[in-house]
Length: 195
Image (tube, rainbow, N blue to C red):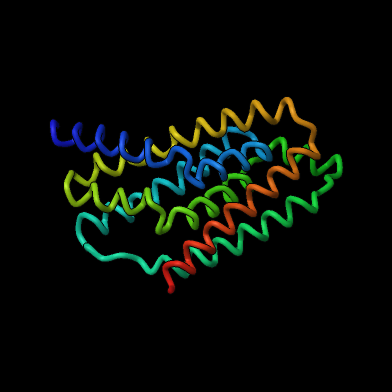
């Protein structure tokens, strides 16, 4: 039990600190201005749990790295597309508005996919791999997942507060810029790794 707690605490602390100021927080902030808090948090948790489980498996058993440069490139291009889509804006019919209020499945899927792509090859994934080589896999997985979700929850909280105080047009432009920054960041990481 002591090994589990050490792995949990150490991985939580390392990943929480590594996540502060990371592109994932920008993503969380961006999604929080467009969707309700709970679906965004669920999406982040699902993606993080999957990526960190893969990280722990790699670090604990396989010792190999994923070819992340191509995934980062695809993810970056997807984020530029998200930015353009956000900038263009959407209008909902009354029926669509009612449906959107009832279901948040599409928000969970969008956030999960975006975070999954963004986290592959990210510093938190690499940190989790490294931690898993030194500590137990389950404590590392649980601690790193909780640490990342907690750090991104701070960004969501900030995003929700901003969403209540800013005009919709400002939020739309801000979200588009943040998506573009995330996309360019991922593309830059991919190009740097490919060269």
